[in-house]
Structures are given as structure tokens and as C-alpha cells.
Length: 370
Image (cartoon, rainbow, N blue to C red):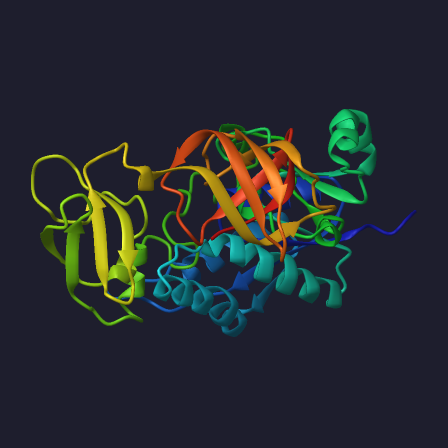
């Protein structure tokens, strides 16, 4: 009898990774559960849920009769995710810590540590699918030929559940990492996942999904940044008239397209359409048709492609998580840059955020908005 493949499952204490673990056990893999301890600090008035999540993950592991380990990445996580996020906000940009967490922690630190510990593969509860070259040639050969997307190794495919699909957050994964990764729930919808977990009697079957910042749960980004950035009062200025409308406590706390949290009183809602970090000024407008709120051309930098870079041509792009896929023409530039010309303008394109590019339902990669 051939040796069972040894799979280390990233168990977060939620229903998704719990079901992944159960499914892999049922499928005959040699499964080890791993809790990644990335963040444990409490915030004022809010207790970090890490201990509860760890306990939930451990209960499921005991229930399934598998080995369970804790990988401590807290020091590295602070450097590659938290410090990165704070630095980006200080520059006036809007980073995505979930993208960086996947790139640097789950599919680099965790993957490497699991392999060194004897694992053959890793698995997570992400809503996505991995397909190999044979699938791509059969299902997307026309697109591959058109765009010179010759299949090389493994490809990242959208999940069945369009509402839960997480390929947007996974676009900076590598093909090499995909070759060692399983996404067992990519074939199911969230309601199906909960029903399957309930059927198996998993203790996390009815646990609510985590919200807010990826590493501190229910805490908002403003409250989190306040721990690292001192208040710096400044002016809120009407973009059209130049009139000072109010005061804010730091331009760092506001992002492009933001509506809430301006405290400008009644009347028409105001939207953030710009900010000057040096002057500590925020510019707003009530005009939803303001040119600064809409972009038909997007420039990307810091590009990452899972396999080969796409050639010029039409593709689908997603400008934020759960945003609909829209058509765009890609024009690669120099120095790892890319220009996207959209059919229709998109609202609130914030520098620092990611745009992800698709060939059908295959995620090719993407880049950061300049």
C-alpha cells in the first residue's frame, strides 16, 4: 500500500477550515491540524479572539482524532503584514493586509514550515480552486493561444460560490505554492459548507465568520491605526469651492471614496476625493460625478503573475473584493508596470489597493494601484 500523503491544514478555528480538515480525513490523507499564531495583542475595549480561535481549532482536531500543532509566526507577521500596513497608510495609501498575509504568511511561512516539518502538502479553508495544466488546455486553450498564456504548472481558479470567492486575496500566490496546496471547499457554497459541518457534528458549524481587520477581528482600521499614530488635526476642504467645511484628526485615517466618518452634518453626503499628507488636508465633494471619483484608466505597479505574464489584449479585472468582473484592455509598460483601459469607469480607485486580472475564471495575477 502506498504511503498516505501528509497534509498540514491551516486551522483558524472557523467552520471553513474545520470542514476542510474533516473532508481530508475522510479522503484518507494523513492530516495534521496547525493553528498559526499571528496576532495575540488585545486592543482597548476589545479582546483579541486568538485564544478562543485556538481552542475551537483544537476541539475540532480532537474530535477528528488528528495531531495538532501551533506555529508561532507573531514576530514575522508583525513585520511583513502589520508594519507594512501602517507604513502604507502613513504614505496616504490604502493597503490590503489580507493580500499580504496570504503572500507572506500562509503561502510562504506556513508552507515552508510545514514542508520542513514533514508535510507533503498544505490545505486551507479558502474559497478557491487549484487546477493543473491539463485542465487549462482542455477548458481554456483558445484563450491561452490568444493571449500566449501557455499553461506551465498550476493555476488558480475561482470558487463555485461567487459571493465567497477569495481569489482576489490570493492573486500573489506562486504556481509552486499552488502545486503544494489543497483548497477542498472551492467546490461548495457557504451554505453547503455549514450544512456539511453540521452533518458531521463539528463544534464550529454555527460559529460566525470573522469580520474586520484580518488579524484583530472586530476592530476597525481607524481604531487600530490610532494605537500607532498620534492624532494630527487638519482641515476638511470642499474641492469645488475651496471652503473649509470642518476638521479631522488625521488624514491617515481617511481613504479615497470614503463617505462615513466625516462628521460634516446634514445635507448631501460628502465623499473623500483626495488628500495631501504633507499638508494634512482632506478634499471632499458632494458630486458623485466628480472626475476624481471615477477612473477609466488604472495604472498598476508591483505586478505579480502566478504563471506567465499576459500579453496585450482584453481580460476581466476585479478592482476590489466582491466587485463584479469588468472588461479591460491591458497594456504592459516598463519597470514592472501595467496600464488598464476600462470599458466603463470604476468608482473610488484607491492607491495601494489591488486590481486582480482574470482569463475566464482563471486568476492570472495582478498589481497595486499607483
